[in-house]
Image (tube, rainbow, N blue to C red; front, side, top):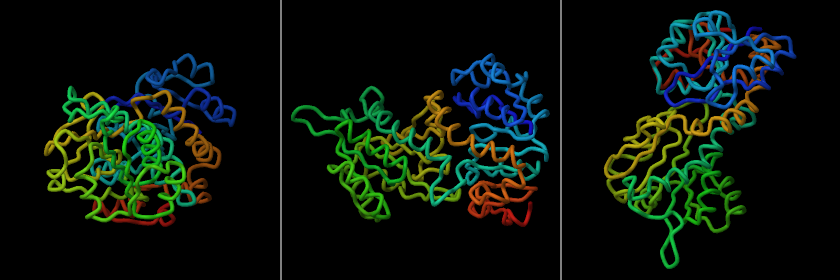
Length: 369
């Protein structure tokens, strides 16, 4: 199979879909890999490294897409890339289609087989989302602490407090991978940490590891109470299957939060937790609504592209190999986890949550292959 690795064009995105060592593995399995010139620069991987590991370096996105069958990238295609696709392409990347009707329309129209990292599931886990959730969770308390500074518009509270001064109150909504990691880091920064979640098992794991954090079962009233007390709110709520994030925080609830408090909305890719959330970039990461600083960067791990690229491709490479070695259709038919990743195929939306969110006709993947 001919595998293409384009240079990311999303603003402030420096990750890359495959590393040079990944290329060597694919070459050893008998495949050809084309890498767009400069694709790995932002992650610290040069064209020479890719070439030395067997890749062919291609100038320009158009030539890369014209030459390749399986396109492996990181972030969802941008409008400038839509015209590059055709019905011979399989796209493997993060898609987050639920809030992106224009992109869904383009993939349907071009009859692309689009496989989303974030909806591949195995034993109720999301193996290709986990590494980036881990990084985003670890980043969140640090980012929040920075923006809590008075000079960044925050209320001027040091996350760790000081002798005789209480630390910041950090509320983490959700106890999945991102929430778990956010709690560990915030705890290590000596904050007062509260975690709210809908179910008990994950909370019990947290309290065993971090016995001094506070945990509460989610309810609207509990959330509102904790929001009023919080200096930092980190939302990690994610609905499995690609559905839109529920809007658990209303504008009215924001008005009851502290002026200069910080909301980190990690799951903004799926629409975000607040009625006021909208995607931002690393260049312009924050905005203020109702006195609350919103940090809603849609590719948080992209701030550390070398770490993030290696962590991501460690998880994605086995699936890339499966798609290439078995062929796209056989790989999807023979791997139920991979089949869950298919969001669009043969001009049809094959992910039920995405179809519902965007008002598209839904067909199960096994009916359209």
